[in-house]
Length: 125
Image (cartoon, rainbow, N blue to C red; front, side):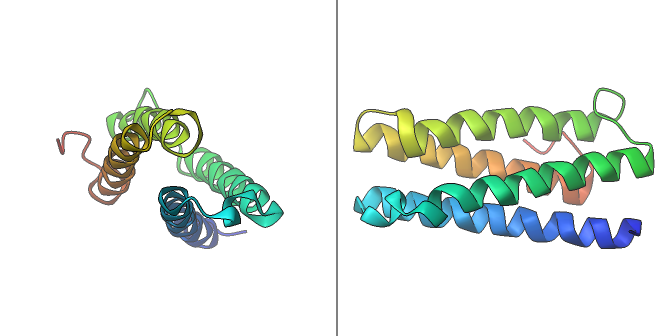
């Protein structure tokens, strides 16, 4: 598979992952039973696994690695922040207000990751 095809797959997964998170967050705020649907629980893992696999493949194919390239390091650290904040927003925070704050933090982390990828500049904020 070509680098360009994998990059397109990666970008598609970034969009699907972000949209999926936003939809699940909306459902969480609305206390929707859709969050319990099997597809809602399985599909994000499939998309995010494909996203991670494509990211690793792109890094390997391009010879650009986290902790060597500053912008990739920033993306990885941003991803860790996004995962923690997203988990708190969708599952772990106890109150609706706390979930809302964690949701906002997760959305900022997602935006930071995307902007860092587009600009290849880790110092956006």
